[in-house]
Image 1 (spheres, rainbow, N blue to C red):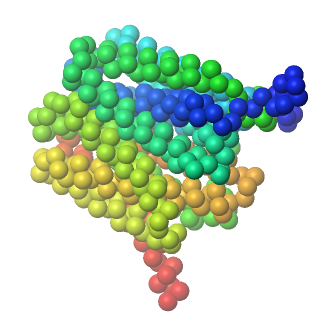
Image 2: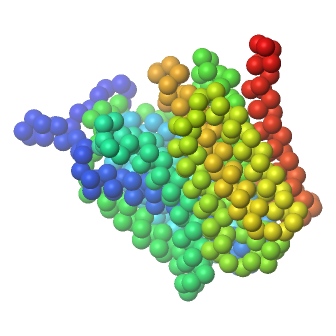
Length: 408
C-alpha cells in the first residue's frame, strides 16, 4: 500500500526480473493479441444473434456500446493496476476475463448474457492494454531491434483485426456458428493465460495496491493539440464503432451478402489500416499529420455514404481502409504529442484521458446510429452519420488552418 517500492530478489541476491527471453516476449504479445481478438469476435455473429434471440439493430449497437463503456470504466478504475501489483498478475487476470467472456457467449441464451459478456470483454481489454504495453517495453528495452511500441501496436490492432476475421471464417465453415468461434477463442485465451503464468514478472517496482479512479487530465501545455487529436481520432473511432456494430446488417439486408467472413474482412481492413496509420504518422511532419488525418476522415465518410447510397461493396471497403489510415494518423499524432511534449508526471493520466475520449466516441455514436436505424432505416442512418463525421473532421481542419490565416 501507499508509495512503498517492492523488489523481488533471488536467494543469490540477483534480481528475479524476467526480461529478454524471446518466449516470454512472445507470450506477452500473444496474450495481448488474443485478449483484443476476443473483443471483436462478436462482430460477424451479430446477425446470427439477432435471429436467434429476436432483437433489433438498435440492440446490436447497445451490446457493442456496453463493451466500449466497459473499456472506459476499466481504464479509469484499473489503468494503473499493473504499476501497483505487477504486469504478470494483471495479464493473467485479463486473459482469464477473456476466457470468462467466451464462456458467457457459449452459454448465452438471451441479450442479458451478451451484455454481461461484453462488459467482461471491456474490462479484459482495459487491463491488458497498459500491462502488456509496459511489459513488452520492460522485456525488450528501447535498444531492441523490434521496438516495443511497434510490437504492442500490432498485438493490439492485430488482435482487433484478426478476432473478427477469424470468427467470421469459423461461423461460415465450422458447425454451430454461435458456439465454435467462442470455443476457439476460449482455448486460445487459456493458452495465453498459461503462457504468461509460466514466465516471471518483468517489473521491479510495484507501489502496492490502492483503489482510486484515475483522474482525467488534459495537459495544459498541449491542450489545443490534445483536443484536436482526440476529436479527429474520436471521429475515426466512431466510424470504427459503427462499422463493427452494423457492417453485418448492411451486408445482409442491403447487399444480400450472408457471408460472415466478408463482414469480418471489412472490419479487419479497418483495424489493420488503423495500425498502419500509426506507423505512417512517423513519416509525416507534426504540422501536417492532423490535416492529412482530417482530409482522410472526410474522404472516408464520403466513401461510406456512397456505399450506403449506391448499395455497393467497393466504396465500403475503400472507406474502411481510408478511415483506418486517417484514424491511425490522428491517434499516433496525439499519443506522440503526449509522450514528447507533456509534463512527465501527468503522462499516464493524459494517455488514459485520451483513450477514454476515444472509447467514448467508439460507443456513443453507435447507439445514436441504432436510434436512427430504428426511426428510419439503415441507409439514411448511415448517410446521416457519415455527414456528421465529415462535419466534425472539417471542424478540426478549419481550426488548424484558421490560425495560419490570422498569422498571414
